[in-house]
Image 1 (cartoon, one colour):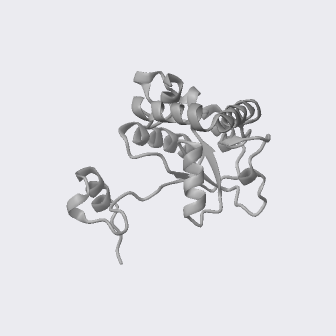
Image 2 (cartoon, helix red, strand yellow):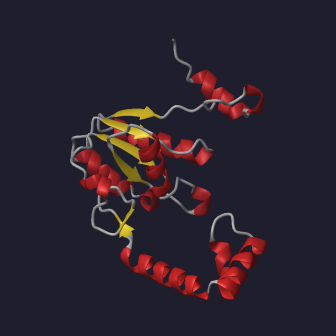
Length: 188
């Protein structure tokens, strides 16, 4: 049961329910789950271009010749790649950091693959770098670090908009989100 608690959002009670369900009602499902996880651990690695998770040297997005390789979107996780790719009309490519700068946790530029990102910047061909990191202090610091790096290579840097969600009511929006919304307002 304790091993299931390593999953995000799974506390002691949820882990207990899952383990008991698999052991009491679905032993075959438990075996299949274990085999699938072992197979994934052996077969899934990082894309050599963007660092997302893939079974091949390059992920399907990096192999897609219809995408624009001159527009690079920086995200913190493979889940962010999926979210942006499914929810937008973005047709560029990605670079996955697998986190954000966090000196207190020992996460510096090396751990985020900045050497690989710098090689991409050096090689030329990038017209725009879109920063889609989180709006946490660490995410903002990471965005600032990357923007400085990209600008030193003459690459245009943009940041995704932050603010009030579509359909959101102002009374329920936190002050930080409202601050971003007011700071990033546009003329209509």
